[in-house]
Length: 72
Image (cartoon, rainbow, N blue to C red; front, side, top):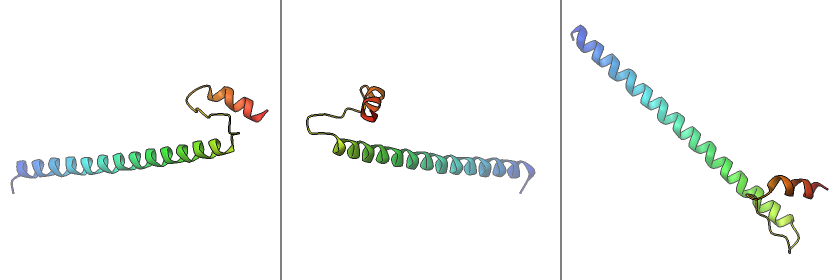
């Protein structure tokens, strides 16, 4: 194997390792996001179960206002 072939092989192997690392990181980030979404979903469900029947829980609107009212 000539020196130029070795250089090409080294570049290819390093780029493959980089791609493998990036795919691993992407999967970790996606898994973390899925866990976070699931936790939020469970939290919303629990909060909704604690509310009186006439109230409706809308987490996307006035969440801070709702949280302060709920604590008082």
